[in-house]
Length: 97
Image (cartoon, rainbow, N blue to C red):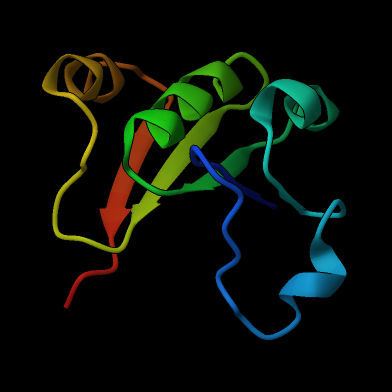
């Protein structure tokens, strides 16, 4: 399952993405997060403020939230990063090369 968040709805362009919009790929954690109650893991694309805030919200419903960031570090404000890193249901990874 994949939840993509951000201040604007952006598509990744990945093959098959269009067919999964609304059925695995979502843009609003507040709207769609409750559908995943009890899931073991969700992914959030983007390490900015919006992505981290939405990810924190999703921890209410799932065992683990993984943030995927294409840069080598999160872009969110330091205070928000600290809050997220301290959360027991949070993990992050970078796709930077």
